[in-house]
Image (cartoon, rainbow, N blue to C red):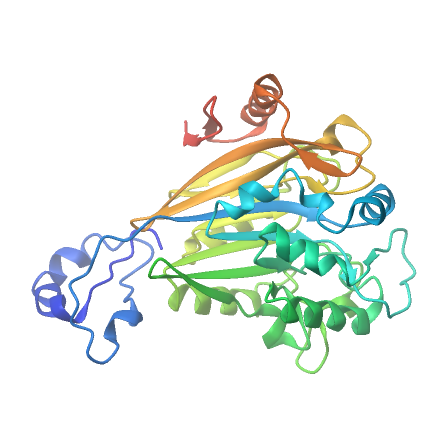
Length: 360
């Protein structure tokens, strides 16, 4: 977590002596202790921590042209051009915009997505570690298919966030310890067809972002028990270039609570970025593995790479183009086109020519 002050048992005395100095510069996040250093017998001198790298991507589904290519080339094919990026990072987190099941009845809505359970192998092989189910398609085939999705993912050692059998399971963070630091991953949705999709105390469903609580309670818990906290959220309107006012406010609210990066999706287009108190907000990563992206905006995609080090977050992008539902890199000219577009629609940020996000 940025600007958080963590100390080990061996330095606790000096920490107390310097507390008056710390209290003048704690800022918004307050004093936060790394509880992992208090394990019994831990007297090892603290070593420099390696940076943590996390890759994130937008909406994935496996219908239409993608399904046909899977049938022809196998379950690894949709990830063919992006898997190398995932495998180079410590953690990969994407939005799973479909249920994975052979069961359930389609909801009465315009688009309903469901994938064969065999695709889980392709997801796992690609290097994806965590999927968010907090979106407007995870319940397309009802609670049975939703719970099947969670079960299939669990069996493949893929973590799920943003949905579950009750409020606690849907809203709770998944934690990963990487290079000695604890990373919390959460998922929420501000785009759901109806209130019946909301998870509740005794009902399966999605982690709703329509109300502050219980969402913010779970955010604060995740921040308290982690060194870094990342949120992926489904929000904003489809086909737009700019976020809604509520999204800009909510993104900042997450960061005020101690979140280190906010990653958005749902619009099926790339949206701009904003920096707030040193934390990046990506309003939409656009489509990723997605059929129906037939226009230019729908074909524009990207991977975000976060680098977490010394309680700070740096980020950069890898521009991609979706062809026949499959994302792939193009060339430097295309990359600069995407970067220039993002620079025009972002707020107080600018991407360098190599895709690094900076403050203006």
